[in-house]
Image (cartoon, rainbow, N blue to C red; front, side, top):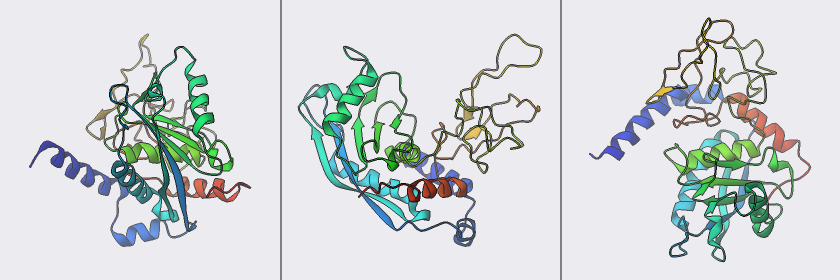
Length: 281
């Protein structure tokens, strides 16, 4: 048995533990979720490498990625398939998106303007994006005709599978923040401020990822070391001196252990979609 097979088995065991399921538990946990009964026919734009102008991902890879991604959204009856695969073979610069000679934002805007097709979810598959890890998803882009775009990186992401990364970026598209969202106040471990802090979702535990938390009576900050495998080992305390225990298996986390969404995350994604006057094909 090779190393990759062993890793896959261990990861599957971790995911089952994270979801805490047998079939009946899963049914009860998600019993009140709406069924959106929707398959999105996405447009997938694939960059080419600079050496041989070969696509960075094959059709088989893309179809498998979308099938695996759909499994994460199945509790609300959402799925994704490739209506069209567009190979960007006229400019290899889109494979590794850089900040020169254009700014990175300008380059991405230009790429999307050239290839985006309206009223569809557009997925751009690239090798890497300068100073960006894993990719980008337009927040609440599903509510628009022109910004339903996600970009996934194949070679600059700790996730084991591209489907985990794609599910994360689609989460942003459907209105989810990262579990550690830094533009909101830090969430307390006891959840007292969960509605105004972190990711604004109350059934995702407080996540300190990316925050340099001061140690009391110390001029330094705690070393940002979070995981041993998929075990959370970060020992800094929140302002109430309680230990963090985030769900490292949450799709919207930054940890390479992604397994699924929570009930409230599913409800939020459904709410964002149903409240939109724009409906993607």
